[in-house]
Length: 208
Image (cartoon, rainbow, N blue to C red):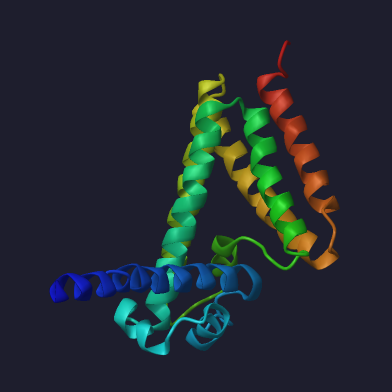
């Protein structure tokens, strides 16, 4: 009976351990979105998440570099899966609307403080951790592939599809940066309007 009580008492410890790691990953992603890679430190993440300092090197033996790397991987996987889902299940115009809606909501909900964590890493040199740029490039390539495949399925040739996919990612990411400094979604709305015009000219609007 005593062993059973001990087991029950100890059982929650494992979820707490997993929860600490998850909180630190989420806190790092949030820091990347708001502060960028260079300003994302272990201390900042600990302060924002309340995770115990001893858990840092238990879950992330590589320290800050591994913490950011793992957060980048998690954020990249989440966003890539979202993009792959909307490009798999919708036409190009609707997929674009859904992609932009996500960022519009993110900007407004964060009072224009949060941007894309992948872009935040990509625009910094990170000479001490070149793997960050490599990881960001791979994530952007995955987005580009999903968008390219969508356009090919709707009749565009692969080369044009790839160029339009690159334009879409680059334009939306740049617009997000402008929205943050202007504290307004106008740059994003202007950008999506032009992208819609490009798509309509390339594939035709529904019903044409």
